[in-house]
Amino acid sequence: MTASETRRRLAFEVCTAYLSTLSSQYLVEAARHRFDYVRQALEAAQARFKAGLVSSNDVTQAQLEYATAELGITQAEGQIKNNLLQLGYLVNEPEIINKTLASPDFLIKASEESFAEAKQLVAEAQARRLDISSLKYHYQALQALSLIPTLSYLPSLNFTGQLRYTNQPGLTGRVINWNLGISLSWNLFDGFNREATYRISKALAVEADLNLKAALRRVEVDVEDALVA
Image 1: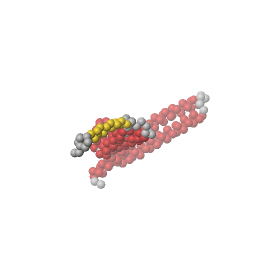
Image 2 (image 1 turned 45 degrees about the vertical axis):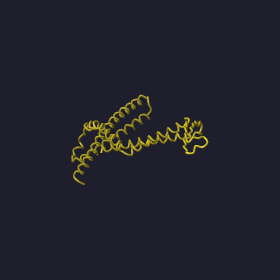
Image 3 (image 1 turned 90 degrees about the vertical axis):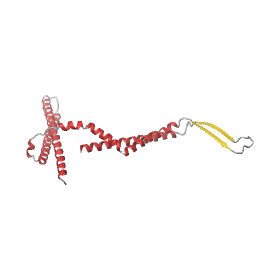
């Protein structure tokens, strides 16, 4: 492993530990707020029990929630200490365990600024993927095929024509003979075959559309993962 790779890996581990520690700080704050709320609820339940408004079961339930909230604070504080120890080891700062981390507001602003750039990269990646282009054409073709059963409900009009030339005029004395014909047919009932064909074609078109949307979403996720990494 080269020195640049080692530095990059160390920077990634420091960032991960920093964000984990920061998340643990928020969890401790949330646990403390919940503990304060549960403590007030317990005091209220005890007061109502003394006044004869509730039974002892309500007090017992409030005491159970109080103990659970207290345990949550202990676990959250233990987690943040472990994260601080890991972060202090990575940055070689043992005293960091006694400090409070600041929220990286500049990272939040930077992520907001790069949102438009990410959307542009996603659009470019989707436009360059040949498999997505193939899925688009496949979906358009199935959409067009689904119109065929519908159009078959219309009457069919056929024209025929024939021209014949001969060097033997025969009894009529003509060397050129021709005729024209026209026919009209309308299949009013075919045993619901057209309806079945239409439903199958429509289902295939919907499936192709879902496959296309899934492929587009996969490209979007891949680009976002690459930007985060």
